[in-house]
Amino acid sequence: MYENKYPAAEDLVIVQVKNVAEMGAYVSLLEYNGIEGLILLSELSRRRIRSINKLIRVGRTEIVVILRVDEDKGYIDLSKRRVSAEDIAKCEEKYNKSKAVHSIMRHVSETNKIRLEDLYKQFGWDLYKRFGHAYDAFKLIVAEPEKVLEPYNISDAVKDSLLKNIARRLTPQPIRLRADIEVTCFGREGINAIKSALKAGEGLSEEEMQIKIKLVAPPLYVMMTTSLDKEAGIAKLQEACDKIKTMVEEKEGEVNIKAPPRAVSERDDRLLATLMETLEKQNQEVAGDEPEED
Image 1 (cartoon, rainbow, N blue to C red):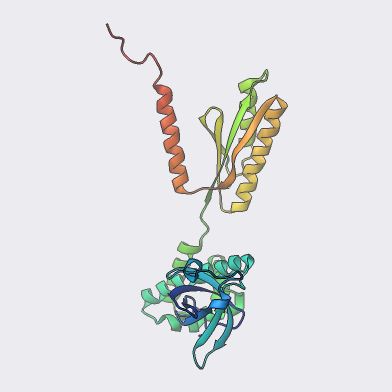
Image 2: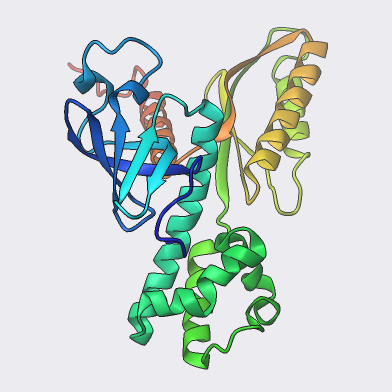
């Protein structure tokens, strides 16, 4: 993925455990063509190690830091215990970006029958230097392809293939977001107060972020929206929750946030749809529907 064959000391890398021995764990560096490294036994954990097999397992991926690199002998010493939670998040983000870039570059290579390394030499590795990471350069290419690719003598076929792959894989996709709330009001205005509050919550919709509220089963409602920006979408749903809560409580009602605003998957949507369908059928099966017996 990178121009340098070996990482540098203090770099964070992602590895896959290949073998566990008395000295420590032998691993392959996923970002560096699978070259071998060793996590020393003393560098596995800050705590006393009772069982190495419980601490690290073959096949698992780990985030480690480089201690020493001997390029002549091919030795790479690694440490797991010196990696902080902040380091893990930073390394995972970098690795996911690099993996996305590598996937695009590999597809362009296969489509145009050009060696992958030649593409990296032509422009890939230089994009890392110019933009900090090639992933950030690829995102800019969506809006300004000529500005980013101008310094490189790229053929029209390669450029067309690159732009198509970037557009397909890096164009932001809308994120589904949802909040689950229970709304009750036993005050004088009752259901009218609830309707007004829910309508006000939907009224906070924006052109690119429409809020919809659906009744699951009294008193449970779900608030839904989609957004390209996850944090902005969560903030908008939270604003709607707060608005509804304020209005209902003013009318002697109560709002209970059963599940705060969060991103949801297609599976969550399917489960919700199934639940609503089941509840609707149950509501239809009321007493007295059965034919009377003589």
